[in-house]
Amino acid sequence: MNPSSGNYRDKRNYKIALESVLIALLNRHFEIVLRKPKSKSTTTLSYIEIESIKRNNDILQINTFVEERIKTLIEEQVKKGYKYSTIISKSRRMKLEETNSLLVDLLTEEGYLFINKTIMKGTVIVDKIRYLESFSISYGDIILIGKQINEWIISKLTSEQSIVLPLNNKILSIFLKKYFNQQ
Image (cartoon, rainbow, N blue to C red; front, side, top):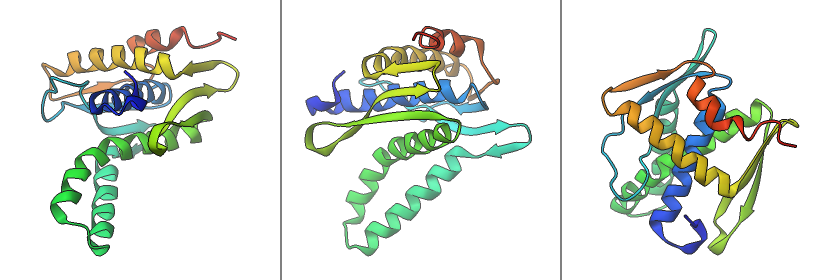
């Protein structure tokens, strides 16, 4: 998986692996409700729909927030004169990018540090994630562990329309364990 290769599948798999790692990290701070993907991907990892996150009595509807953000972006692009069919096609890709952007913002508020790197054609990737002095995960591990987390979550969603990941889900904690206190 190399997002700088220009290969669509590699780029998408990287973004989905990143999303999966972000979900696992977010679960250390929030209960998360995930929804079954609308369709099963056969060529790439499956995008995970995040319905909501909850801490105490506060609930943030992630999916609704992202859809509203995309609607705003579409309206802006229509005003600029872009073809509507092109915009709609791009909006499908925007969902993953906007979801990841929101998750990064939420985790930044929790104290995580994201170190980005610009690669081929100005594409920006998350190269490393750190949390205080106790957590560090690099690009290669984001791909490796993200794929495993994604496959585990998708396996849970095969028989259910949605699942609730309680705060500090034990399985997600196991996936992340080796990246904590390694310094």
